[in-house]
Image (cartoon, rainbow, N blue to C red; front, top):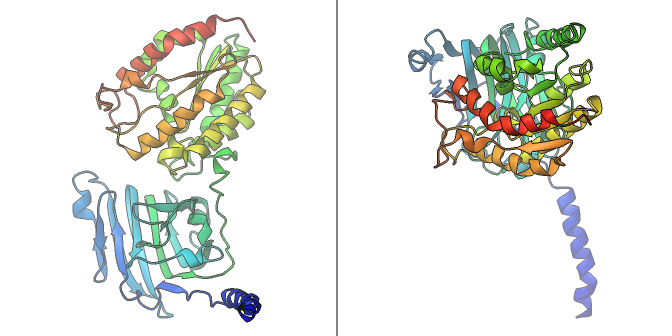
Length: 439
């Protein structure tokens, strides 16, 4: 038996050497002089896909009823160098795109050092935005926002975009069966072309992406295509409003901080606001689309620096879930960081931390499940004195857990009746906190 033991280290060494020198996977060229055999080219619309078999396809018939003023067209052409180019034009639509679909691909060997690269020509993007997406298994896709780089590329001809494939991977994703390894989605209005789409085993990225592990706690402006024009001006306007209220001896005793649901107090909820909160010179610091990192940016850039309210009402996180698909733990980390920032900047203010509202029609909704997982962790962030947690979600739901469009017409944002329900459910705890002595 001795010779066998002697040979064992040599065998292990040979196996390790073979693994170390194993050839990297061959590049997957999805679109070159022509589409890779078996690749389907799809035009994407909000609720439909349309295969490009000839030179051009549009989604006009699918859009006509719901989006009569919108248009999506995808066309094929040849560049002078022989490469096939796909040109996407879209107008006044929240989702359009071009996608390349294949038989399921195993992209796991590419994740460590691989890249996704494509040629991009941006002809018009002043009123639109872009997002690059890669599938991550059945019913899974990950995205990299490309609004600012896309607008910067407008009018500059063909440019090579190289992204680390790891930009699209999170813990638990299954890249063993990827049927849609590339999509470029557009929103608003615009025109772009792509060519030479490939996944390579290596390469040097030239476009950065956020780290999904830290994005929710890293302060950032909201740079979505639909927010760029108004988000920063609203922030400046709110700074002026707060300072003017202080100068007029109307310093807010109550501040609401959050996203579009909070901003809705200025719109659908305005009558309810006047009844319940105007007496406190309340200030609405809700910004549509905000995620935790956007609230952090506003707080670090003066949002509450002029203020000394008795109570701040905070509800944030549903856009971490809906717009980006963050894990619950990531959103909770962002909420914790936001609470810390408020406590630092408003040392005499109590915080009423409100559970993220239910969304979608039924309890089975995946997005609602994520929000519920977040809410389950929020009581641990409250001490019952400086930070108080309040869950009013049952007030919105039927006994079977369904959410009615009579109070949230889009199954996300309350109407006036929904804001009245919120105010009534929150009032006892808010009254108690407003009556307590200062910290």
